[in-house]
Amino acid sequence: MTLEQLYTLIGPDMKAVDMVIRDRLHSDVVLVRQVAEYIINGGGKRMRPALLLLTAGALGYQGTRHYEMAAVVEFIHTATLLHDDVVDESALRRGRDTANAMFGNAASVLVGDFLHSRAFQMMVAVDDMRVMRVLSDATNIIAEGEVLQLMNCHDADVDEVRYMQVIHYKTAKLFEAAAQLGGILGGAAPELEQAMAHYGMHLGTAFQLVDDVLDYSGEEATTGKHLGDDLAEGKPTLPLIHVMQCGTSEQAACVRKAIEDGGRDDFPAVLAAIRASNALDYARARAVEEAALARAAIARLGDSNYKEALLQLTFFAVERNH
Image 1 (cartoon, helix red, strand yellow):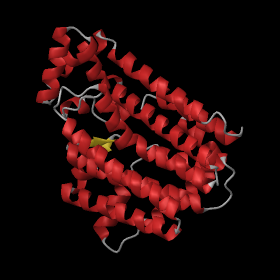
Image 2 (cartoon, rainbow, N blue to C red; image 1 turned 180 degrees about the vertical axis):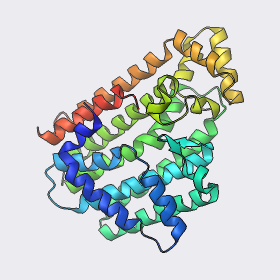
Image 3 (cartoon, helix red, strand yellow; image 1 turned 90 degrees about the vertical axis):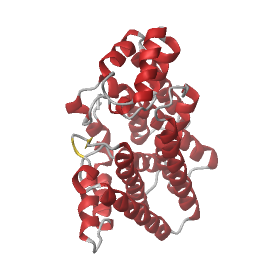
Image 4 (cartoon, helix red, strand yellow; image 1 turned 180 degrees about the horizontal axis):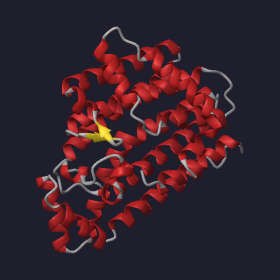
């Protein structure tokens, strides 16, 4: 199933969220509008806002506050993308120049700050302390995840436990928050609200693990990024960690050197080591496990088209090629 098919159920809602996004992007400062619109209009799966809409729908929510909350989640995500690309010195995202390549690092960082602060203005306007707590905690943990990832760069001794912590903080936390917010808006009982949060966390983890796989197996025209970007930045992602733990001594030494040195010179040799040690199969199997945990988390959720879409989303997360 394609993402477009999954979103059919919430098509009008997604359009309403896009209208909120465009309205809230307004600023009297021209450069703020230019950079923000450039990154927001740059495609992307809009998975986090869709997750909020689907979880709220699965719990029978009938209002319109979820549009504002979905836009907040997208703004927080977009701000992290702007900052990520500066930190990683990335030049390509979603098949086109990154905002920092187009407008410079300073503009990207500052507009990322604008999006963060605009998100907090919007969540304060909702006037719900539980919503603010979930989003402010998530934003803080995401920032910690960014720092953890920075500390792990060029460190070939990072193990799977340390790496999974980065994923949980940096990527899965916003998925978790989006799903939990759907639960809060839908008036879910505490146990079911936590189940939605667990669903989001496991889905986000599966999503990131597949991204790790695609960095060594995807097509650049499909993924919209340069293959080997993670290696060039010295990031010890799960396929590399698996090679060092389960590959031959020569393969482990090759990967260790590539992580510590960074760059793309060792990419062919690293790719050969990854394939020889079945590292991509291992990482994808871990993603499949996380997707299964996500489905299990919502087993007690009442049947509906929204629940079916949430279940299908877990399959899309691990089967996608972009």
